[in-house]
Image (tube, rainbow, N blue to C red; front, side, top):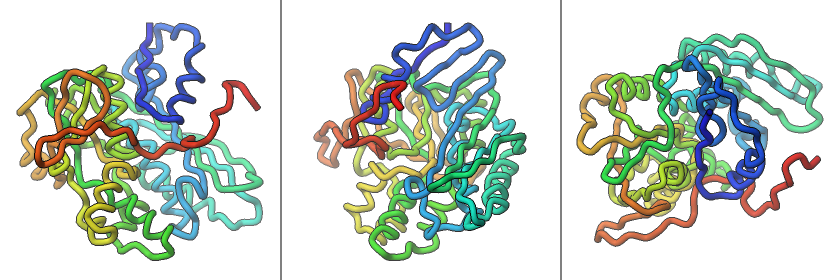
Length: 333
């Protein structure tokens, strides 16, 4: 029987739990069902879908239509990276307003570019008229013989992240304040890079016990790892790699908040046995920084440890589409 992985806290995830609570038992062909970054089918096939909605995930005044496509494709492929899967194919569905205000060829080119950069052609999809915003739905198909799930963390393990955090959220905050982010912040938002190769290296070297991509903020996504594994995760404040460009734009406190809660980084948060990661290897092979940001212990939830060693439970997670909104009943119109 397939497995359903336990989700962390949040109104969005309460809604998902309600939608999946009454599901029939999963068939034997489904190895991993709801609750992880992707579903896993027999044979190591990994499937995920990700939506990008205008004025929710992006604004067309911020980035070009081609960048909208790249960003949507990268977010979906990042889910495959979180499972340790190699991308195989992509399907793109688009709903756009009539009248030619959206350059659909450019949107398609952006999705194709990021897909082909990871060896996955666009093999199908759908096109529809939208009476409102531009909507993209990207389905990704990958494969791995060892899908990495969220529920493998154990007390005593280390918690790591790739790259730096907070730059994409800092770009959004700059735009929302009426400004223009600098080139580095803008690039972080418009052209995220899924960490497929880095994830595959972790799998091939048998280093990773649990993993998730950071789409909703480190605090929220670490919360999913903790909930799925039935453990507590402590993040060490002075170890979290905050992007220097975010600090320049928002100041130290604002940038730290963006790194912890902002989202849209599409870096990896992964859990390993203690002492097995060679950060120099990842720097030399991929040109990417990997940082140990915390540890796993018995308990529950996500905690922040200050420089003085004191620990505070983080009640606030990451970005939540349904925060403060009454969730509809499953099946409600």
